[in-house]
Length: 230
Image (cartoon, rainbow, N blue to C red; front, top):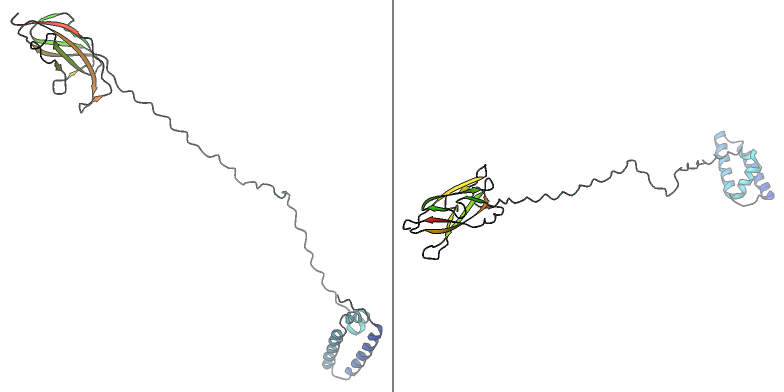
C-alpha cells in the first residue's frame, strides 16, 4: 500500500473538477458518459497516486463500494510425520541370512592294499626230496600273486643264478579264494644239493602292474634234493 497521506484541500479541488466533469457528461449519451467517467476515474487515480486510494475510501459515492480482495489462500500446515527425523528406514522385507556352504570334507585316503606275507608249507624246512618235479605250496591273501625265489646254497659253478617263479613272463601263482596257492618246478641236480626258498606277494591289476605295496619276504627255508649221481 502507498504511504501518501490524504490532503483535504487537494481532495476538494479534485472533487470540484470531477463534479463538473460528471455534470457535463450527464448531457451526453449513456455509453459516452460511462466511458468518460471511467477515463476520469482512471486518470484521477493515476494522478493522485496513493492519494487516490484515500479519496476512493473517503468518497465511496464517487467510485462505488470497494470490492474486497479475495482472501489469500492459506495453506494448511503439512502433517507432521510420526517418524522422527533421521530415524532408520524399516525394510519391508526381512533380510535373509546368506547361506554358507560347508566345506567339503576331505575324502578318506584310499588304503592301498598290502597282501599278507605268503607262508610256504611244502616243502617243509629241512626236508629231503628226490630230484625231479617238486611241488611248492602254501597260503596267503586271496587274489594276491605269489613270487618265489629258489637258489642253491653251494658256490658256483654248482649253482648259478637263483630261479624266480611266478614272474610276469612265467605262469602266475595266484592265491585262491580259500587262501591257498601251489606251483611246481623241476629240480634235477647231478648231485645232492641243498636249496633255499623264500616267497613274497603283491596284488596285480589286469594290465599286470602292481597295485599298492608288495608284502615282505618270508623267512628262508632249506630243503635238500638228491641228485642222480648221489
